[in-house]
Length: 201
Ligand SMILES: [Cu+2]
Image 1 (cartoon, helix red, strand yellow):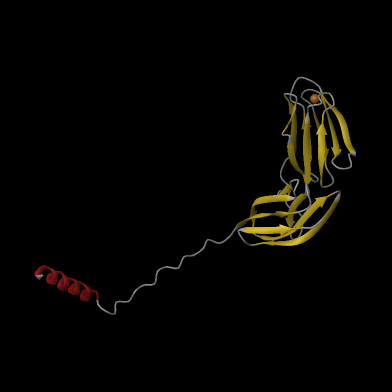
Image 2 (cartoon, rainbow, N blue to C red; image 1 turned 135 degrees about the vertical axis):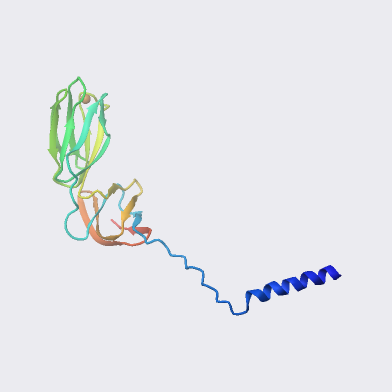
């Protein structure tokens, strides 16, 4: 019993030393990091080309050409995003002749059909947004896709119309949707970590 009393007395002394009116500094408020980029995703018409364009003006053009090569009897890469107006080099980097046939997906309209001799290249500039099927009729297994777009922020919706664009800087955009040969646009403000989009055909 004596021991318990002594402990209680000690506790009182310690509490008194703290003082009753000691100012308590407020805990620093948790500061959320500002959102600088967003994942833009949603549903649009199936297989549509989805592009985010600047709110005004044109997206800056990348330097240099885009390149689709031919080697090991393949197109490399087998899917290539290029910019409308950009030089696109179709190269042949192996020791056998190929050709390059480019046709607009959907209509099937042929854009060009050229032979590509070893170590040669053919240069083309796409003048419209669209998806293009690329083939070599010497080697039927050679198939590729070119997607011509007007911004580096672009993708293709899947068969259910779902798409995702990651790491989109916050800001105001024009959302451009191209499907079945036509394009529709709407304003889009990207300001949250996730931005949901729904565009009916
Ligand atoms: Cu070939």
